[in-house]
Length: 349
Image (cartoon, rainbow, N blue to C red; front, side):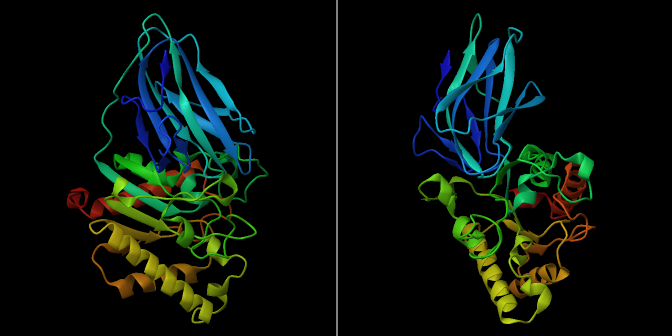
């Protein structure tokens, strides 16, 4: 039995490109497709579009997490996810482990069994949360648990898993649907950070896009009315120190003042796009100079809104020189979700 992508019983989450109804494109980390099905064999057909790393997809079947490696070519490939399942109902969550180091076109599921069938899954959570961040918010290198508090190991993307990002962990603790609108290496401003070298692109150029990676085809705008979060976390201000850590060198210098001006403009743009959302300004425990957090605090105080908050983790900026691993992400998500809960139940209305 072939389940086409436009089947109404499939449940999608994330900034997904639905311009082609029969070939939606999953772009951001944590983007997902959920299906409840009856069958003994499960396959999925995908078309991978690679920029870098070895690309992997993640999935859960009946609560057990697994992954598979995608082809590096542009061809359509059918992957067998499960065989010899029990007859009866099963739940699948297929999700994007990685950021836009690749995008993947979803072309459908195939299920076999005595009486293959699909039904609607449970409704999505009513709460909604969005993260604008970098690789830490994507869960990059999160599975390298032997390197807690250390530099990253040499890798080819195999340790990256958005499921274990502090962002998705926070959403699960709060029972909220997540849009993880984050990208590894990204900074606020064009020409800084690490994303899309050598013509580095910043959040200012990407936050309002559905497809945004210059290596992977046509750039497309996002329609913000498709997802309205109750809470927005802005976790930018770490990759911004590349190629020059001007904030550490001269807090009142021209470049530092310019960054704060543009950071404020970005926050105020989000305030206008999401006029009821709580907006939390933060970085992470990844090592960086405290002047970036000082700048964020200054902007927060200048805005002076009761729905804009500056949040600091206990080990903010000094927790690890490498990416955040699963135990560290768990601790961060505990702190962040606890803070969000202090804002009251009314924020979710």
